[in-house]
Image 1: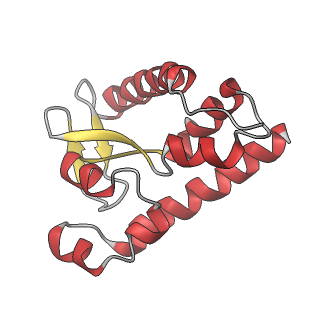
Image 2: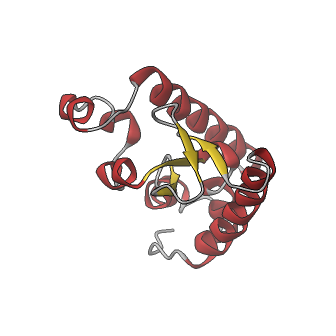
Length: 139
């Protein structure tokens, strides 16, 4: 079965996940959203220019599982906490929909951002493992 990529279910699940993450960040920051950038390890506070980012893009995950899983199941996998990172908007934009494992191998990335490869690669490995584990629950 080959079906087109639609973000409807993914976006609804993403909005719920972001709301929960924001509420937790408000608690951590004692009234002001507080995060640790998933790719740099730097502190991010409410008001900073940050984005919520799918470590592995929703389109990538959809392509991988569309023949075996429903849109709701794919949305659940895409939006597991380990696959949602908070990072500076500039870093999120540099990553786009690229495969994160290839993205961190681009030597220009280090020159143009504050990414720390050890931190970024840990976040990527954690997301990949969690995605595979969640998908195996459905397959």
